[in-house]
Image (cartoon, rainbow, N blue to C red; front, side, top):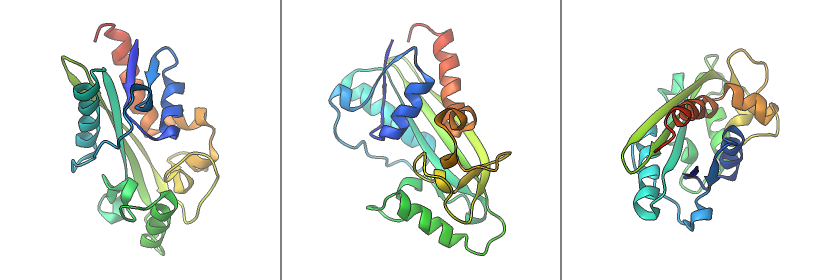
Length: 193
């Protein structure tokens, strides 16, 4: 079965393809979509749905898309839906991490959670699957693997950041891994989309 994963992030694509080896996962580039799909919704779920529906409408492929936010308790859930552009419109992952570390400097409460929503859109339905990984923000970067906020996020029950874990270790407990597992269960029980 062919499914489009609506992302331009090569790291996300690697993670998801590893979780779905039995499916032919196409990237946006594979279907000729080279433009960035605007994320104009004010919720993580809204942005995931928007991206998946964009691909179905414009390219006629069944599609799933994810949106992820890092929610920090003492920052009232920020950066949340703005996680990818927390430090501004032209920022990168390093800028975002440094802004977050600065915002939490001297704060003992560093509880946070990653939330991913995966939206699957077909010609007949749109379904959403949510995954949450609770943890905390470290005081400095740890490890060199992963992407985004991985070097400063330590999942609950671990003494390692996501950036210190192998792809398999991270996927077994991560927010994206949990959401994709729900997607897999749905796909296995609904052969026809």
